Length: 590
Image (tube, rainbow, N blue to C red; front, top):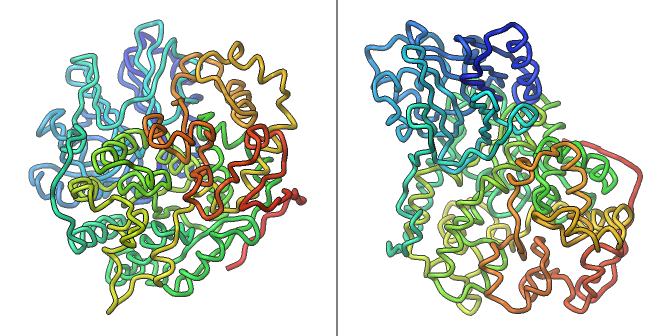
């Protein structure tokens, strides 16, 4: 991933303004430590911080068309750039960068070209011929993007909030699947898939069609000119990513450059569920496996830095981002610059444990639609920013546009969880890769129960966060929470603790409005809480809050004060487990 910053129509062409833009662009340097660039045309500035993945030698940005009348700064990967180049025989390309096609496609098709792009991207394009500009964000919002407005009439666009929050009167999240044109001065949705209307599909489930669509999505993400690997938690999604990558790596350009030996990475507390499962999958697939251990104290010490980088106060996101943040630093230290990850599957297939209570296929399908639409505020934000904090790029094949189309077109009756028929969560995905003759994974891994990342790294991680928050947030502070934080009022001490840190970094009202709110159980939307009356009394985003579903569910007899984090002891499966905080320690074994 890279970092982009554009300041457009600021009515200031001075050297001081250029210096200020460069200063703000450097706030994004962690996203692109390899090179930086700035193009100024009058009172418009396009800045770029580059993480070189494709054509590291000559693909520096901003990028241009032949006569440099079209300028573009891009954060993204365009997987079909070679096919698109073939559609532009009369254009001369300056670099081997996959993103250079954007400038030339605009020349040929105007703003209508965006839907031709197969990949992940956020970009700003300046047409110096009429001083107009165009900004766009990928379909699901895998790459982050913010837009703001200055008092001088300027428009600001940045990969992260920290690039514009101090200089804009108002700013907001740039919506996924949209473009913003100076000619219209407003958003326009360019991504309009059939599932977006939430109409109930009726295509019969075909396991081979689903399998082939996913394999295709993984293969196209092997486009790289730098060392890469896979994130492997040992759960279904990351294990399938690793299995498909390992199976198809040989024969690719990536294999020619870096060999056919796949590297895999996992993080967890000592003895955590993920570490054990990931090790087993790695052995089965024959990957070079790297296992990172962290302690509860390591994670707690990193919380402030994590919140600064991921730019949210959402509890689930912070819980899961912290181990990923620590792991990403170690991965980058090994010389790896790109990883393939398993985000998005739970939203598409109804994989979260609360989907066990979906009353019918209509409700299940509508909830999956709501979850996909919100991904840019949660898992996409985490996967992108927690890795980009250390100059590491994460690619997510489950969120491939074509794969989503195939998956969301399946009759949702097939996604319904029916234990009496042997159908657990994400049964359609598990069945698609249940190949008796040429197994992708061991059976017990293929049918392992869902673990949310923040749970799977070790249950004492969340318990430790709650205990730490309880030491820093008093009951009196909680009593006044609604007065201190009237918007998205924190309802637990953990949420209050994160909010205090967030507001210290991002004090603007616009900043707090970028973070979603509302009640949730086991990562549900607020609407899905209606599925089970018991859930409204146990509003915690952990998967273990899915009472009666998770094998290590919170004991429903635990007082709410303990669940809220005022006591470090938790009761799980009716056994008390005290959380022990050890001295900081981070080790790596390969």
